Each structure stands twice: as C-alpha cells, then as structure tokens.
Image (cartoon, rainbow, N blue to C red; front, side, top):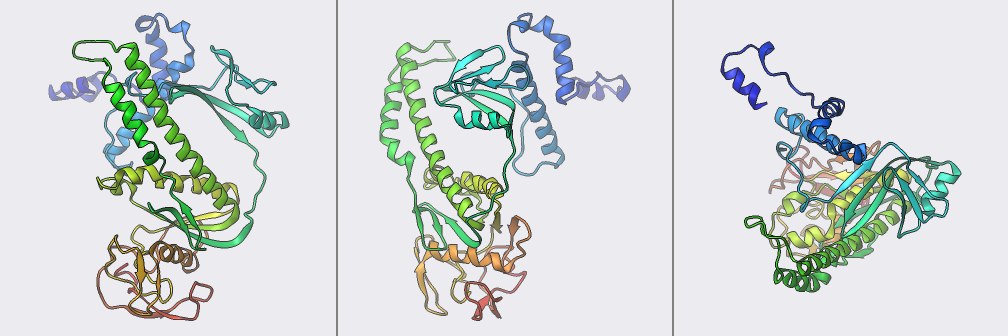
Length: 409
C-alpha cells in the first residue's frame, strides 16, 4: 500500500502501479502457498490449519479496518492489523478439516496432527448427541486460557422446538451493582462480586511475582523459573474469577429464558460506564454486556423473545404507578418517591416494573431496540401531558403523565 501511494505521487498511471494483493481468505491462502517454501521451509511439519487460522484472522482484520475507514462499520475506529504477541495473546488454533472426533470412552478426543488426547472433563453430553445423530462437528478450536488447554467444538445441532414455562409472562430485568438483577416480580438476584472476594489473594500473588526476576525486553533478560511459577499462579487466580462469573451468569440467564416468554432489558452504554474510574472495576466484575448477550441467544433457543429498551428510556425516573417522570434523579437516591401520587418504592424495582410495562406499549413482533414514550434524548424539565395507558399494562385504566411524544424522555 505504501509503495502504491509513493508511485502515485510520482505520477504513474493506475495500470503501472505495483499489483495489489487480495485481502480475502482465498487470495491470502493462494499467496501463502506460493511463498511458503521460501519463507518457511519447515511448513510441512505443522498442520495447515495453524497457517489458515492466522490468515483468517488477517482477512477479518483487514476487512474490519477497511469498513471502518469507509464508514461501513459502526463503533470505534479500527486500526490496521498488527502481529500478535506470544506473551500477551492467548495461543489458539482452529481445525476445520481432518480427523476430528470424540472417542467412545468419552474421555478422549482426536484432533489433526495432535492425535488422541485425554480430556479432564467428560465428553458425554456431546457424545450422546453425536451417537443419536442430532449433532455434527464442524470445527474444533484449541486454546490456552488460564494456564490450561481447552478444546471447543463448533457443532451443528438439531434442536427441538421449545416453549418457556410461562409463554405469556412478561418480566423486566434491571441490572445493577447492589443487586446483579432486579426482576419486576420483586425477586432480587444478588451480585456475587467474585473479583472483590478474590482481590486480596490476587494482590498478594501480584506482589510475589513483582519480587521475582522477570523479563526485560531492553536488556533481553529472560525470566527466572520462580517468576514463571508466580506468573502461572496469578493467571490461574484471574481465570478462576472469570469462570465463577461466567458460571453464575449462565445459570441466571438460563433460568430466566426457560421460565418467561418475554424479557425486557435496557440498552446500557457499558463502554461509557467503564470510564467512571470509581465504578469501572465493579461494573466490569458484574458483566452487564455478557448478561444481555446470553439472554439474546437463549431466549431464541427456548422460544421466547428479548426486548431491548432504548438507551434514553427513563426507566428509573418514571413512576411505575402513575407514569410521572422526574427531570432529575441522583444516583445516590436508592428509593424512588413520586411527587405526583406519593408512591415510595425501591429504585431498581421501580425501573424493572417500568421495563415490564414497556412490553405492552410497543409492538412486540420482533426483538430489537424499542423506544417507550418518545425516549430519544436526555430527560429535560418541561410540561407533561396527561394520557391514559392501554389496557393490560401495569396500571391499566389509570390516568398518568408522560412526556410529550418526540420531545423528551
């Protein structure tokens, strides 16, 4: 790219420029097959999937960078792909061809080039589906995470049609730090705070590692064996916290998706919330984004639907009884007190009830962001318009106040 840019500055025509290299995976694979004998004469000793994994990551990185420059990709600006570091990145390889199978003893798996490997956990759940003919292995990814090697199978599964236990039930889920999830039914899901519970031990292990002789890139000093052992202990401590958090989120989301037909959550700006240096660690420990991601696909598995309230929907500022909206509500106010009807309720429970009521006020034909009461901007103090809610909502038949449509939230 730099060579072509330099040639353009010399006034050369487009036809006379250095030929471009294709960015697609087939084009990169073709270029690699031409050059591999010269640049890597040892290529035959490794599986071809090791090279294909890197080429696939390169193709996706180049496409994301190009789409980000042209405006086709939303979100933060994506930089040009860089080489992965052996120290800072998790080693992984994805096998798509060759002998990939689960042994009948349910304690071994067979992978290309690696052969027969013993697994720490039983593979009976996957083996049962393979024996019944309801699953087919598409690929296998080997990855080192938390000091342990894991193999994950991408499987095509024939899923039976499922229905939630209460298909007509609607529930609002308000996530927070005091409680991980507050349901509109009044049930509180505690926040386990795994990182905070393990912080003392992790600090002790980090101090121990800092006292050892670690690597130095400037002097090319190699780390000592004692530093490597201390580093592995730190890695295992972090992996244990991540596994505990993942296990708790899976249990919570599975229970909600199997029980309720419609779930309503908020579209939180988690990236913006993490900029708060006082709450960033606690927000990251709760896993708000992972909670919503798991609910998104598990509701589809179980025959339900997930509704996402608009980011500017004032779930906490709105009274779940009469519908009046407060212009300001400080984060320190944990109890919501309505100045119109006098209702006093826990702040999070009030927000969860408003989310549940939102499902009746919007078209629930499909999942996706929905806006209630014209929520398209920040709440501003203004005149309120009295309207009557639709029958079937949380306060059917009552006369409430909501902001004018299309003006405020």
